[in-house]
Length: 359
Image (tube, rainbow, N blue to C red; front, side, top):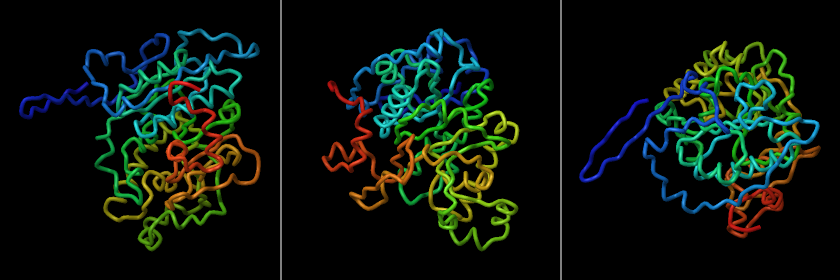
């Protein structure tokens, strides 16, 4: 743990830079395993921006009889757990809370789900605990400085936030005993039993995700990439298809063995000098994994519901069954609802919104 103190004028600001190591994370858990049990000693102050949040307490969601009872002090290493990773950010916190709520409501075995929250602000844990008192979770501090020097400008400033890149480091942040995880974005809801997604077979692949091979794959990169054989050679002997990184099942054991974090970082370094893409954290994943993805049913990522960059843009669901609704794009349901300009599907998201004091 490294403390960096900066003094200016009459006040002192303390900045904590923590890179969680497996040894730090593998201590025996209490009711909910936490990486922030030292917060009271670190004197981290609650940002004023959090004062605007007030979430209703969610009802208890017990396991069904067929699930069996689960010890409240269960270890994160228990092989019967389903692991879900989500980022917690002030701007998207309302979405993250709704996502967790939707998962619990549609699972027959919610007590068997363990959440891994990636944060750049450890004070968010208090809000999660007060909203979901019985939730099994752990909070991981992700130091923005890990990736700040690797991030390039994007078409939207929101895509440049360091926490968007935390998914690249799941294999390092989570305990070594966690061999598989479902990664989910904060702007979605799950309307099906997430155990179905968890049980997806990845075969020999490292990640699984819904693929969209009809999409124009070339548009996710600049002409600089397609005109340089050094870069296009990465797609030799594979058929690359677009996939959305907001919903992925990841084999962390295989990821660690191969070292995919370093491969992604290498492409980010190339981007800094050659400008081979415009879309933030997505293209490096496509460069490393496209064509090597275990396909998952499209029902598990009905994405694009946030529309595009045109204000007021609404989109409908794609044809077919729906297990997960994803408001990827610039329009977020909570913002449109608050402005009294919701799209029709935003009302579906509102069912899981716990923001406010009363129903």
